[in-house]
Image (cartoon, rainbow, N blue to C red; front, top):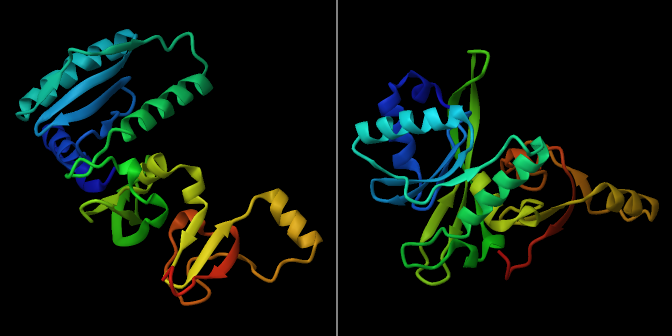
Length: 237
């Protein structure tokens, strides 16, 4: 949460969150046991509700909040989930499955599903820094990144949050990072050991904040990774 959102009134904060939410995007307010999906210009659908008294009360409060800012909350197809019988690991797995199912429904304005895009060609883009509020009440500046993917049908360029990109593209896409001139492939422990033992380390390196070849700023998720670095061909560039 940014400090700007924390300082807002509840109605203003909710309006900001919903307006930023993509069509088909998932909103899970922290600690409420509710999952919403944006299904219209000013409509959110309550998709999942945990079967607890706290979630039931939160549902009433959220309906009042959503309606107070001129939005509609559709409650016609709510799935009640019994969380008391689930372990934390099972609960996490269910939440991830829901997020991935939602991501499968995201579409370009031309109707092409985002999962049909050439996701491996996503371009990581540094969008500047933003002040974030920490749980301790202190603030810090954090880098903001997006991944731009291009529609193969209408060529629309769509910026995605890194988390959303991971849902669409899967873990493998997050293990490979391309700069304009280099491709870095993250190596697992077993591969690292084998290549060191076989003395095949000419293209192995540990990444820091900047690309060692051309000085480009690297996204946080690749920093500190042991990677295999190869130059991009003219065709790839």
